[in-house]
Length: 398
Ligand SMILES: Cc1ncc(COP(=O)(O)O)c(C=O)c1O
Picture: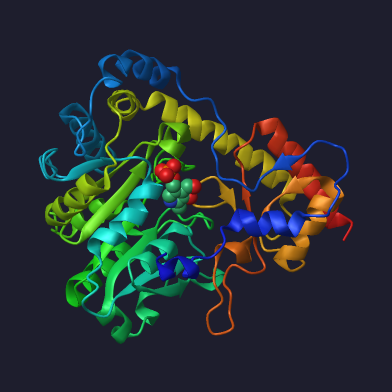
């Protein structure tokens, strides 16, 4: 077997199961705030288009580069959403469908990393664990950038040693961030693009939470938008990752896309052709319907907004917790260490949260996820409110 497999860490949920094992919670109904799986209803238009696409979808091999209609729908959406210059995105060259961003974020490193020279992959800490596994299996060394409360839970790019940038081949960004909910401002994205130009690396911006934001008037800025605003409208070195899983409550559709630098996408298409990960035609058709509709996305945001308001009303004053810039997670600081808090909360109130230290790595004796827990407000409003009341009671009894 490939010895690099031994370097892969257990997934956070394996650690969580081990932490909870042997604990018997009270019989009051379990509420899981631990998993970031959207639970709002999938819009009917997605199911209808999927059904319609079965014929001839099931009887045809799809192309890896996807149907032109899907690539066009994606380019139209990107241009609209991020106010990109007209015609700066060509559906033939700048976009590829992927089966959810998870597989694409992993595969991307395999296609990008040049193993013939020293390779670092730079990533935020805490982070979505796929970035680290992708780096390790591509033969690269992960280099973590702490995202601390003191820096708005965002990486401080100017604190990174230039030697690190010199061997960096790929930088993962996550904005809006999982788990912190922090959104990178345009100026930071542009700073990163300057660094990428100077030190010759590729930026992979995971923007899969970009459509879950609180203020309808100020959606999170994206990497392509930041690039275009500084005159880089061929998106050199920039690739963004988007998904229907969170935007459209369709995690089972496994549908997303990558877009950006055409030379990088050409190489990625070559990789994907061999990997054999074309999206089934009926999923492509359902995706066209989803990218072309914003009504359900606005309604989705309204539901999250209502939940944040209700839950923070209950938790405010008892936990050190703030409204995130975007996304559907709360990232409170815990009055006990995060593992003890999680286990004791489960034991006392049958509510599961995820310890922050399971989403991060200790570097130089500092773990930026420690002392936090992640709470995903994915369940119904009533269930989220019930969970918040139980958490409040738990904290007040400490
Ligand atoms: C930060 C982040 N990126 C990517 C993904 C993968 O999403 P999908 O593969 O459903 O697009 C997730 C899922 O939870 C995530 O939290």
